[in-house]
Length: 214
Image (cartoon, one colour):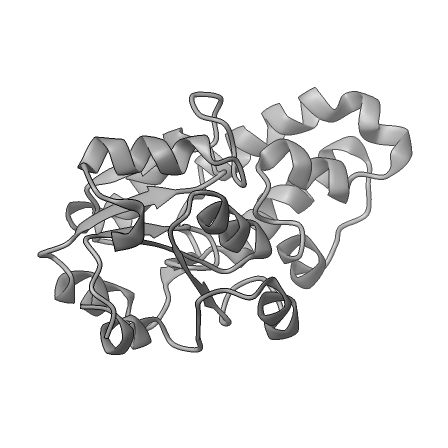
C-alpha cells in the first residue's frame, strides 16, 4: 500500500453524481436562448472545464455571442437546484470517514459558491478540510498552481499527496504538480480515455482507495 498524507479530490464525477442537475440547468439555459435540448450524455462529456467552457461547447455557433447571458441563466438555475437529483457515488462517505486521519481537499473547476452547499446537503462537509473552486480565485485545472497552493497550505510533500479524479484534466493536474494520480472510471469520462492518460492508479469503485492508500 502507498502511504499518503493528503487526498485532493475532484468533485463532479468523482465524489458526486451531478449529471442530471447540471444537464437540467444546461437545458433550461438552452431553452431560454431558443436552442434545442441536449442529452445528459452529451452534456456530461463537456463537464470538467468550468461553466463557461461547458456552455460554449453546448451552444451552437450563432448563440456564442450571448455566452455571458447563458452563464448568468445557468448559474441562477443551477444554484437553485444543486442537489435535487445529485447524490454521492457508492462508498464515498464511508471511504472519507476511513481516511479521517489524513488531510483532504477538493479541487474543482466548479464555482466555489456551490461547493459548501452541495457538501452540506449531501452530509460530507465535515469530512473535507479545504476547498478550491474555479471562480477566478485560482487558476483552473490543469494548472499546477492550485496543487502547489494545497501542498503549501497543508505542509505536505508532493510525494505524499494524490489527485483523485474522473478526467484527463485531473490526471494532468496531478502530474504537473508532481503528485500521485488516481483516476476513477465511474465518472464522466470513458475508461479508455483515462487509461491513455496513464494515471498511477485506476479504480472502478471509490472504496478501492482504501486498498491502495494508507
